[in-house]
Length: 119
Length: 456
Image (cartoon, rainbow over all chains, first blue to last red; front, side, top):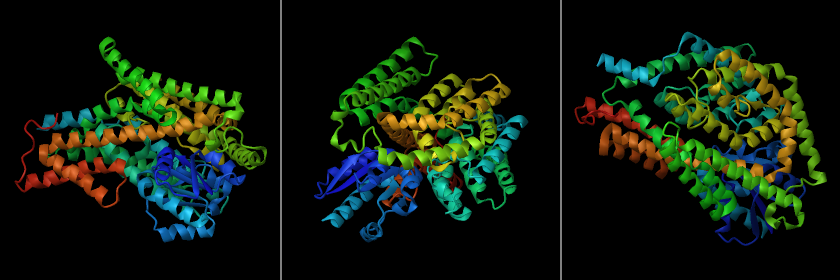
């Protein structure tokens, strides 16, 4: 079971979008950058999905500073392919930022890729 | 025609006095300097990346590229159209480019020069562009003023939306009903007051009340924290240390540069006092109409949506916001003259920077309050999104009736169908500008007659 936390401006929408898919093997909860930073470093959660208007810095908030740039990736307003996401997850990225107006495509993509990894 | 043109240009207000021009140029030089030294950036999205730049893990060019990528859409999509349609300057137009120019400038002395040059381009160039556009047969800038009614009235709903997102339907409906009741009451009893102002005040107070009540309840009964609360109140003793040390080094870096921040506060507050600058998304329309007290209220409530984000990103990166917590905007609108504004602005910035550490600690203990700021920003985005889309279609209708709606609405839908190359929020105003140009083209080809009477 992979635990995903959401944060940023569209955190409620991301959680709703993913919960609605009913994917097995993942659990998603609404959080915030500060709580998620604590939870991820303490091992109480595995992944963070952040959103803001640009899909960059504000989506990640304090996570870039606390977990380090190496753990973080921002898609900005671009839409990644499933292969991109799988590759990033394999590299060890745990914190992802994307833009509000891409939630409907990127959030399910991320959730499926994370679920595929944990099964 | 000549007098009508002059009247239009006058109404649009892009006629700055020499003192105002000088202040804009000076403040832009200062903000570019602050961005160059990585002490402050306006774009909240760029701030987290400043940490790596400050510590030398990212180059000036790479950071500049990030800043440009994150800011360009907001300059052309939000800042420029809003300034053109209201005649009032805004921080996206002035401070996003000075972020980029300041960070990219290879030498320290070059940054203020580039910033000043941008300020001059804005104060001189915008007036010219404005005059030119108003002289066209299809005046899309005057049509753009249709935007103000939907923005002002839908903006009043943002606290109710935020309450619904955070605390569910029941309390959301209650806040919505109170908002609507207050708008009706205000229109009836105090016709001189902007109808949304008391409603917004009460709505924001209700949201903060619900949030604080939730935190107090959680603090009293720690056993009841929901399993999906994700960490909840306590950071845990093991996890608190890295955050605390990161935050204290950020706060210490900012305190070392206190005089520069006081100068920045003085400049931004004086700019807000000059009545040619609107800080928030809805404020430019109010400033343009001379409703300063209402503008101050709107921007004051907006502070609650942005304060936690600005405080935590500033503490985590060691770079502050160009406008701080943006409290200097509403203070500036209300002060009687620029000298008082400069003094008060400097003081406010000094207090903000000195209080950052304690604010960061307090926010750590109030998860619902931090949560509520994110819902507030999401609600502001939702309300504005609809308002800007609807206002843009009203502008399209004012310019060219059905044909205008077809062209502007069509461009918006095309952007959606192509996977939104232009950010959704900016797509509709951009479509109005493009549609306005297209209608002028059709006019010159003899294929289009402007709507009778022109846009009012």
